[in-house]
Length: 524
Image 1 (spheres, rainbow, N blue to C red):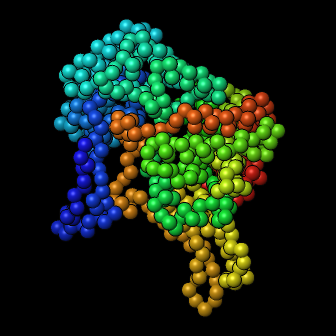
Image 2 (cartoon, rainbow, N blue to C red; image 1 turned 120 degrees about the horizontal axis):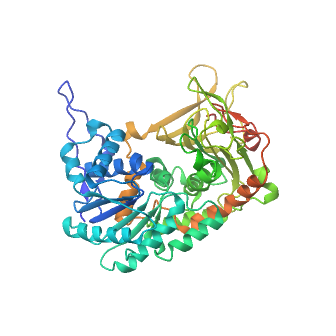
């Protein structure tokens, strides 16, 4: 398919009648990579994920001319809807997320006629046979071809049942030789190493690895994608990206929110499973990987796997030297009093589940030997922030500055959310006759720099899955290795009840013990 190029802008009108200067950062860039005709089936289409994230993403892809013209969408879930009721449900969900004025009626009407629904029981093969019939109708009615994308937006325990029923109904890839069949699997992929392996066994009975897209929405964030560009498209960074110049790496994913309505799920998961094992370890791999041989998906994923392979899981007896856990108690967020974790709905009043996890890991490679990677994630913390901070070595010998001056370490910060961008801290002389040195920060913001707002992660990931680009999806070998890395920590934490819980107040920086793990944490 030919590339669609963004024309050179000739200025945008303003109220004064004068045009803005064109943004040189966006001139002549490739845009709108349209996938082949296909039909997406959303299992669990009456659930929260589909409502909040997936249908708004589908509408936005349509509004941006990224969806193929020959496209269909089928919802498949237990809740009883007619086709018209489901279409209205989808419209209201898109309006709630994007804003009522953002939904253009003509555009929505065109999309709505391509949407239908099947009220289904996941244990009933006849409902999957009805789905097969509906897909065949879509292929004739909309010209969607034999290309099918199945999205498992259901609770993880249902995954094996759906996969089994797809096989029984003849909806597996082997039964579709005239088109492609792919499946998107939401996290968590298992709840521990054993369950992940059991799930993989069921998946590979029906789908090959190249047909499985394990989604981690963090990898769809614009700033996460830019980590490789920052490293491998700039000669000023890659030569110093090693133990010779870097003292440590800090990766933080902090939230001010509590568990909200997810208490039942979260109390059986915790911060280590929910964030560290997937989101945060994937960020570590992107920071630490070697340059891939090409931009091919497997070339990139091969290098990520090598990073995981070089991380030695902590021995059981060293878990408390390498990790810290916490659970929030009552506190203040944004000037409002909030309850502690054990008072949240659907949470045990004696819960041993961590809402904060901090881990120190080492990568046994030539590039990173001896450099600690500090990972932390938590709920009800002082600020919502996701970032990667590269802490460079201090200067070896002081030449400048007054005796009272502190010569700060250089820091490169990749800001993932809420303010997407990159900042660099370096030292400069203060103007004046004295030789004072102060740390200063240079910031780049994606929104103002490129003049556009980054698309939500699910838009990029859905588009990539339709196009067959697996770069931002997690391969099984990496999933398995990530579980192997965290399992010793999980085993020890689950075997010992923490008598200190709750050990940090909502709205704080987290448990004090985290500072013994890394005294140099950046302030939240």
